[in-house]
Length: 96
Image (cartoon, rainbow, N blue to C red):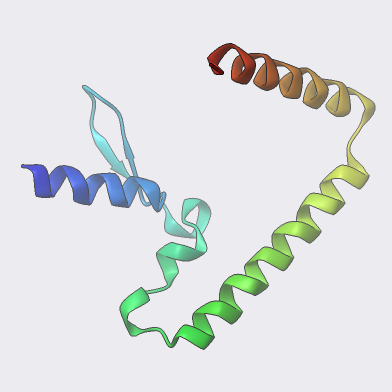
């Protein structure tokens, strides 16, 4: 049972399944929800290729974040500032 639980947890981390406590486990469309990690069988990958692949992903994510920040509306910026404040407050409450 522990092995199955760990396998499901890993599939959930890869965004390949959706696990809801007390409900069904659903298989997700990997093309929409799966990250790059789900596409790369790590054991068969040359380390240099994996490094290049993840570097390309990082560059794409940075560019996507830049474009999102550039194209955001004033309303979206306000909502993000509110969220950042809420996260900071929650972090401060949990600090020793």
